[in-house]
Length: 122
Image (cartoon, rainbow, N blue to C red):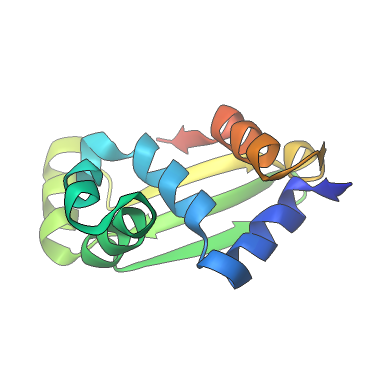
């Protein structure tokens, strides 16, 4: 069996991180909008990637002994809006390391675990 972290790493090499990107966008729709409008244009699989490309400048993944963290950097106009309304410049999310080390049965199980334990950092 693979760990959640292994599945996420393989997802980056295979589909450009679709699992992380989709989950982060689902959790941050209030801040950056939704990719749902892109589905009718591009189809579901490409909607996530295209919306990410248009609305996210960069992201960093970092980790320590306790947390696996994702920090999302937005374009300047969205960063200004985010700071003005929420007093934050980036979107930050964490998953506990013990979850990242958990054994998962398959991609779907990994997706459900990641979605369940991903938490925004204020």
